Image (cartoon, rainbow, N blue to C red; front, side):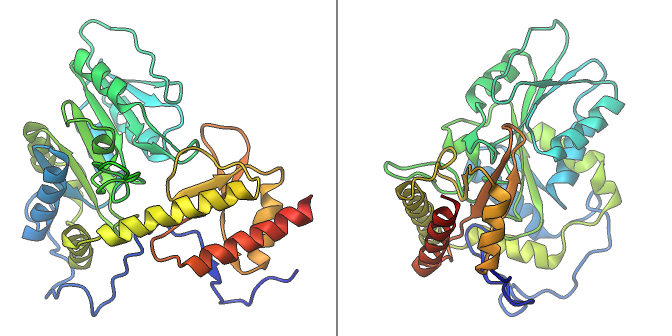
Length: 349
């Protein structure tokens, strides 16, 4: 089979813009200057404060602060909060950003350790605060972190649970009966948790399509992060375009999009099962299957004009074939993907 035409994007299942939100120059709120040119610690637009407060309120957190990215935010958290002698325990399969941020804590004298993926094992250490660092949702096993257990351990140790929820924010959130995903405020609310001892960080660049991050937590900690420095001393706030996109994402009514996303995910998972393909983990927009030769399957889909993802899991051996489902995928898109996978499966039999 020959590859599809150069420049033809084909049918794309590689984008993590799960809600299918798009922002063009004609749709964003108007602005007079793209950037302040002033470090965020000195001045940031009112929109940044509104965005942080909106996300915090949706989670039941006391306060929030905006950052340029999840990496900037996690670097500030790990560089400013753990002190010499504190323990930073990281999920062994956490996204690399967590490990990079932990280097800041190690440089300040904190002890950095890892614990088995989603199996926290901690021994009480007198006089040492415990900072637990995990992703809210793991795309490798398509499972949430054991946040309730981690929160309890943080409270008992007088420490903090730091959750990088970039993948799940805008998708998962507080649920009603029969609702698999919820209202989008993040994995902790999806799990029914309050915000006690939780410091939550997420990029809005995925489901919300806005390239900035928000950190939420207790008022004293957020005030310290906002005023003391870190990356906010060295970089301007997110641009006016970024803030405009985040404002549209947070204040728009996206219930229909989220409902369509859930419908698309469940529809595709059912079709994959009908084909006899093993679907990985719980329902989530990252839909993955394990097949003997994932690269060959990926290559055949690409030749058919369908872009998928080869995913090297950090928590399981081997490579999976993954598709990232969006709210703006049509039934015809899912039909085309299903037909292509059926053809590939038939050829591999």
